[in-house]
Length: 148
Image (cartoon, rainbow, N blue to C red; front, top):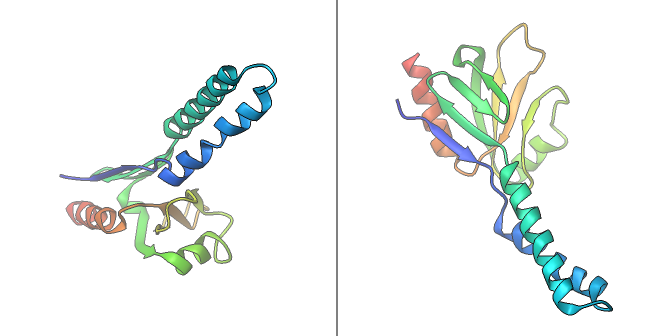
């Protein structure tokens, strides 16, 4: 059984934007030393990128179920999977969002998956998950559900 796994790693624009630590630290440390400012800026930049990368959540689907971040749920407890993009995705993350939903969303990934939870014991109505390749996730989801 082939599944799907994806790490919701930070976007390139975010890594570049964090690079603003370099000129900011140079301005702060300019009275002391320009090399010190560059060194502090680089350490802050690399450290921030490393933290974003290390703590980026992952999503996966396999024959056992779906995992989003730290949560895992069996296929038998899941209903439909819907894909939302652009304005529809923004609405799902905003005005249409149910406060009880399980969220694994990132602002730098536009498409979101809405996976309905049909477990009567679970107060969570659905999972809302960011996904870079929703078609691949959906194909693996359907394949795993048909196999069980």
